[in-house]
Amino acid sequence: MNTEEYVKLIFTHMVCSCCDEPFTPDCVEIIRVEDNVAVVKIVCQNCHKNYGIAVIGIEDIENENVIEDYVQIPDLPPITTDDVIEAHDFIDKLGSDWAKYIPDELKELPKENE
Ligand SMILES: [Zn+2]
Image (cartoon, rainbow, N blue to C red):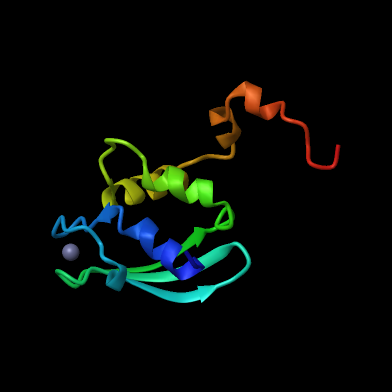
């Protein structure tokens, strides 16, 4: 699976919030792929709603197991664009004390240089 196929696969697990149809690979236009990031444009091919540009991380693309794990997520509802918008709203409203949401045990992980 190449990077473009992988990125398109991610979006085919989502549905359009406008018409509830799953996105197809044709809904995803790959604009640019850099080291660990892909820039894509999402347009529903069913109702033609334009979701604009998305930037997604593709750090683990070489790890086939990650892809397998992703594809085999059991019995979870697909992520909708409403879920994404909700996440954006949540992030937008985070104050300067955002670190309070990080569990204490994760704050104690060793730093990379140690
Ligand atoms: Zn649609």
